[in-house]
Length: 214
Image 1 (spheres, rainbow, N blue to C red):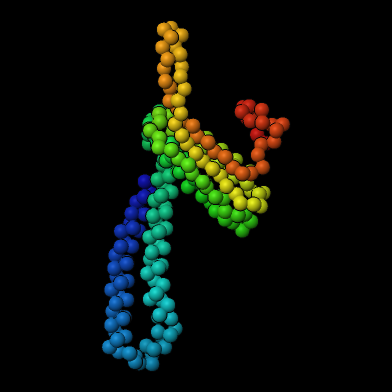
Image 2: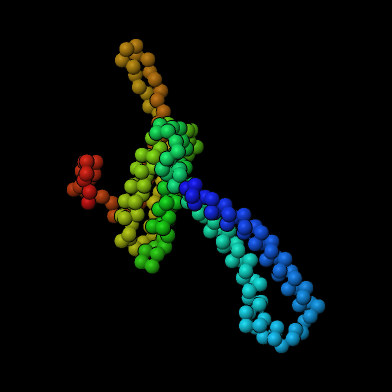
């Protein structure tokens, strides 16, 4: 990530100057045209050749698309970092929704509309959750595989394709055997559902068997 971030920083920094330089040049061309509306034939021909009107309108858009692409790369790097948690201790307090969102960004290429498939719509129903202590990298791997399976299940679906993700806090009582004191334990529920074909009934009992795959 560090080796990618450095070049991206160079691009970001230079785009700022490129935008200013472009703005100055466009302004110069504008006032030049006002004072010299009838250029010599050679210049007039070159203006026609390069389609100056289109160029001056499109060039700022080109720079903006470069800036958007650079920001997109930064987001992907951050998501990969959050997904892998390589720079953090194994057991750590994290925001669960950040891990889910990072996983979705990594899988974005499978969610978008393609030449053969429709776009998959993501519906998020996140509750306000506290920090959760967990093994973040392993948990993100779980999100990745569940969402990947959901996408697989929707590939042959011709109707609207939807994956719904919801989180919520819940609690239950645990009665301690030693003194009969009731302890209130909180936990987080994460639900990931799709409107695909579902898991065939005859293999539902085997999905948690080690190394079982379809």
